[in-house]
Amino acid sequence: MPHIHEKIDFTVSIFIAQDQKVLFVFHKQLQRWLPIGGHIELDEHPEQAAIREAKEESGLDVELVGERLPIQSEDGFIPLLAPTYMDMHLIKEPHWHIGMIYFAKVKTGEVTLNVEEHQDIQWLGENDFEDVKWGLSAPLKFYAREALKRASDN
Image 1 (cartoon, rainbow, N blue to C red):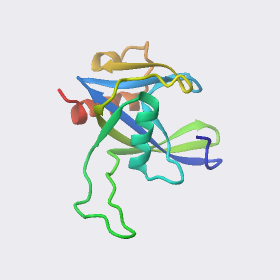
Image 2 (cartoon, rainbow, N blue to C red):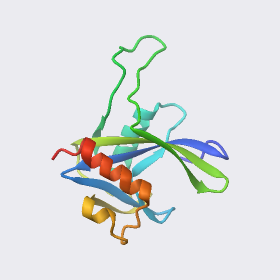
Image 3 (cartoon, rainbow, N blue to C red):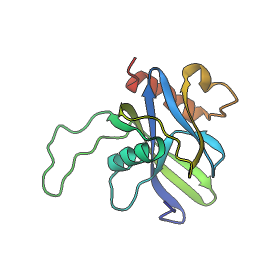
């Protein structure tokens, strides 16, 4: 999805954990390893964006991990799962993203490379996070470790 606004957009990043590994993709346009993620579209809320992006970019159906208000939906009110973290990161001057960070477990599906957006897709374990081969930033390493603690099935 193209940028909605010239200076800032809302995005989701989904750190999908399974078997003590986290899924990363090599983004063609940005030329770096990143988690699954993308823009929140105008007709969806952040949870919907996270689940949609996970499916589109990996082929996986995921379950987001976290806490939701213990209040039921009613007309005009939808309690959302809070992102575990939020950040703001520069894409390219003057454009920034306000990122909502989610952790997720795999429900079903097989990992599939989205060749339109990515060159590669890999499960990385904690030992891989520090390997310069992957070029992960300090925030990505932190989020990936947190995903292993909070969302990994083992």
